[in-house]
Image 1 (cartoon, helix red, strand yellow):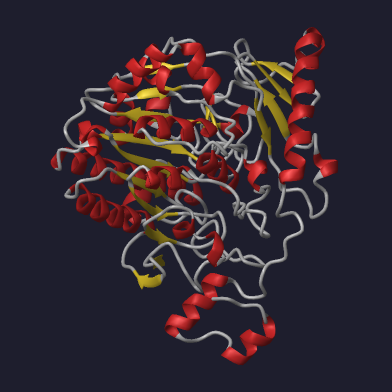
Image 2 (image 1 turned 60 degrees about the horizontal axis):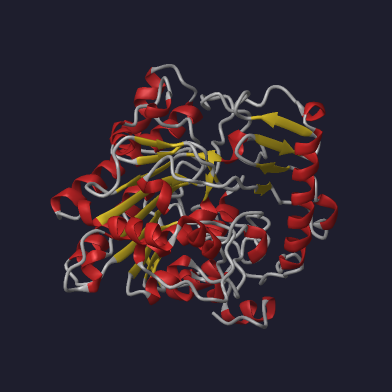
Length: 492
């Protein structure tokens, strides 16, 4: 990414100015160093697009609690992620484009976060934060890649990219799992839960937040729902209003899954108030890519999940901390998931190791002043997902370069986002200098990331690790001798 690094940005803004901003964001200091640092709760949903909120103009879907969060937050209106889920999570966790950590797909071992990567969770933990994950991980199901090895103290997750999913190799969930009453891996042991998956994840997250709030130190809760990813199922009460409105069953269930998320966000907001945590907690809400129901409302954007166009990468991003951040403030600066690592580190007063090079920059100045100086930048997008061994020749397939005004797609299409947010008019012939600069920046970036794709030739185990762990705990599945013959190098 062609952008200022963190140290240059701080220098440009002025040491005194940044110090003042950080003092305000961290709140009043007390005798206990931990008391001045906010708790952090990050909610990220799966396959919910920018348009799947009534506050963003959806004419059918009702999301009153997320609308209230929107009204109480600083909102980034031009916030971008990767076109699909595991890549977004890798970039969020590392502050770097996902290719730099070897994540070029969502399956086939190419969803594994490189073991040399440093996560924001590790940085927060080193700064004294308790850390918990509830829901979807999707950055490697083998033991070495699990969340407890990447900085999380409390782990409550499903396997693979979704509950019940299984692919050849390492990416797979517990056998026979479903969205209702799922088996969830809790700190290394499966627990058989009761209820709808989103409710289950929020239940556990709220229990953990409540317990941590009674301790001295701050906490980081990562609530990562697998909903509204397919299969489209939800409790009948959530689906029924949309069926009654004449929607097809799958669409009604998709909206019902989001309505259920909305109610759970309402529960979270109520508990933060009840426990007097709201003013001491930075609450973030975002989604992991564009929506996956291309025929539904999408706020006027082109395309959806898996696409290099706006509809594939632009998502909601709300930051709420009552008494510290503004309410109902829109920030139109170009921002992205890679910015969360430096932002959360700054807010937490955490030290980023000197060895860590980031693509992102801290959003702190914009959180406190929507019109703060924000130098232009390039964001690089690539769908990945090429066939095995086809990385080099996929350079210009499903890719984009974005700066504040323009989006260059597939090296052949240029859109003036300021004038044409729906990307309907290719103006590549009108701006040759812009195109030349974007192409040069992309070429430099590609040359940097291509050698970082460490998972391209990875070969996964014969047996999915989650399934093997499940069978060892509950019985069933292949017997021990067969497992040994199938995968002699098993370690779980």
